[in-house]
Length: 387
Image (cartoon, rainbow, N blue to C red):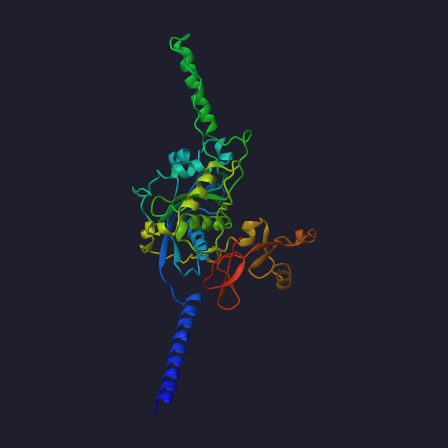
């Protein structure tokens, strides 16, 4: 074979080799994008505390309430489906009610306090001292989360310092004692959320950014009936994961620091600004696998399937049930939503307004091989849309 033909053959072989390598790289990239490979899995356990207001407002007691809490965490876990770099597995790790003393210390349980918002910044700080089975909350891949039936604000108690100078040899020691007593009383009063003072807007829940593996605690609202606090709880889990969470669950927005915002908000935004990818080595505990509860109650739909005495409509709008007419239901509610109609036929004659529509419980089947999550029909694993 002469030199020109040999050179042509070598060029042809080289082009084929380059083409094959390119196709292999493209296929590998497509596989990664389609979620066929999981680079790493992070594990987060969720331990639930409940306060007396949550338990009083909940429709469920005893073992049924325990099933509700398991399904609650299952709903949270579904919002982390589809993550691949890394994947996040959220599992139920147990629950218990707060003791009277714990509730008094963390959120307050006096008659007046039970009807006022919880100072969330205070509650998060005080939760750090709680123990479970004699162990502290430090150094674990477990998120200790308090469910309350009360509204929550970002307010924190501000210590009041007596700035009035004391003149040595003043009129009497009684004046000094009186000032101290007055200051102490004022501090005690200011420890409660006072509606006559500065207004603090209610928030769904609070936690501290990137605290998993150090001491991860939080508080959130739920009505104890229809999993109303699942979305907020998922936001808190995303928040405590900090820079290792790469999904699209919406969390705190930090456009800039504003004087009008709370100290808690500004502190959280500071942490977001200063925690980066370089800090990911602080989260090694997330690689420790956690045993998943073997309960059949894996999500809210399973809960309602097991406990048929309660229904999604009845727990959302008392006195209603899912519309029995298929035509009516389809006309008034989109996929992964339910239409709720009054139970008594007599009432239906007087109700001319549109039917009440609610999201279907997480885990309800929709279409082929898909389930409902946050009101959307998604594949077996998918993240929620940004809200």
